[in-house]
Each structure stands twice: as C-alpha cells, then as structure tokens.
Image (cartoon, rainbow, N blue to C red):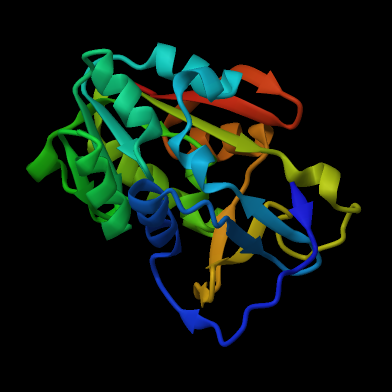
Length: 243
C-alpha cells in the first residue's frame, strides 16, 4: 500500500529501524508501521504485524519456497523469524541470520534455537559449515545493492553452499514502474531510507532484478537458474552450482 510522505518531526538517525519496530510490536503490541521512502515515489508502509505472519498468511511464492527447503538451511535476513520458525517447527535444521540485533533478540525470545546477528557477507563456512539450502525471501537478493556487487554475492553463496545444495530466492521485475531508458543505471537498483516513529535510517542501496538478467549473471558466476513460480511481476528462483 502507498500513501503520501509522512513528515518526521525532529528525526533521529537509527541503524536498526526494523529491529525497533519488531521489538515494540513483540513486547508491547505497538502497531506503528515502518515507512519506506525513495525518490519519485509515494511512501510505502510496512505493517509490522506482516513481519510476524503465519504460514496461512504467506503468499504462494513463500509457501512454495518453504516446501522446497531440504537439509541444513540458512535463512538470510530473517527479521522476526517468520520463515525460520516454520522450518524449525517442521524439524528442519535452520540457522537464521540478520544484521539487526533487536530482531535476533526477538527471534530467540520466540524460541528460535539458532539465531545470530551476522552480516551475510561476513558469514564464515569455517564457523557454521556449509548449507544444503540457502533461503533469501522478501527479495533477499536485494542485499547485493547493485548489479556490480552480484559477483561478490555469488562468491559468498559458493563459500556457504554444499556442492549439491540449492539457493531459493524471490525478486520482482520493476520494469512496469518506469519508462524505457528513464535511467542511466539498471532500473532495479533502488535507493531507500526507512523510518519508524521519529527515527530514520541512512540511505541504502537495494536491488530488484528481472529473471532474465538474474539467469545471465548467475550463469556467468557458476550457477544455473530455474524459475519455479511466477506471480505478476514477482518470481521464485532456484539456483544450483554448475558442476
């Protein structure tokens, strides 16, 4: 859903917007939403209860991904633990990571056994071993930030993925939002700020990628891509290492 930009009174910079919102909702049932701001678009609103959605409330892409999970699994950008909690309930050995300290605290309070405050790009296979499934939901590939950073992203996947493992990720083709040749850079490279109450984050890059470009760049970096499911402009992809 969208609405006009909501002015912030005396905003304070905070690096853990999602964590603060998640913690307040979990502890106090505070439903104040997260706002997402980007140039030339109305402000997006993320209802915090959506971050705690149950299996019955998940879209088909997420449900399909969860059914495809096998073996030791890494949930990247777990937030409040919605996917990891379901996997743990289904007896999957799941490790959940997020850069947000407060999100990880909430995950642990919810009963998630393996939850760690870690940056995906700093995760070590020597410490955690390799995974049979790496799960990147809610446009998890966005953490690459830009097309230029995708080789680093794929290299880290190679370090963490078992030889016969799989990467499950979803993304959205944003082509429908723009006129042709409107931007000099790839149209899926977005810059956002997020805010919560009177707190606002620094601007950060976030990547959306169309399936054809994903397949091309993944192949260049040693992965084959299978598009499992399409839903409007969004899709679920499975990536495997090319042996």
